[in-house]
Image 1 (cartoon, rainbow, N blue to C red):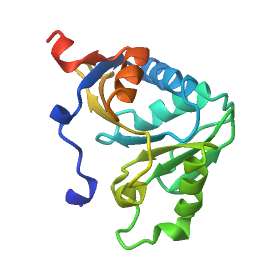
Image 2 (cartoon, rainbow, N blue to C red):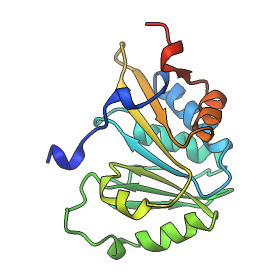
Image 3 (cartoon, rainbow, N blue to C red):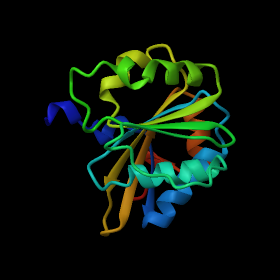
Length: 179
């Protein structure tokens, strides 16, 4: 199970920001959502309790989604209509041999590729091969911070595009961070 849910090394993320509590994590997600224009793929990594779903809740608010946003841990896919449709996937409990076609992933990818939707995926490894050629794909890594409610968020993505996104969201470049 550990290999199935590998978490990327923090050293592979050039941009970082710290949030203090669920409210700031949701606010980070909201700012992210406000700047999306459709076609973006957001891959979310981090241990259980890192705030991945909280970040997606904020992202949905930034896309004018007013209904309840909940973790798709057991349903695998939740879809939310707003300024853009958000498809929120969580593959933590996905069995390794589950065909992605059976849960509608190919239709979702078509909608994202057409720019009509945004995709946010927790525990995305089963989907990575299907994302080949899709852009922009951003990866966020949530880690526990210094305090019990603090979270550190790493960001990586396409050169230039990720830099712009990081600046807009208040991320600091790894070399610019104070320790």
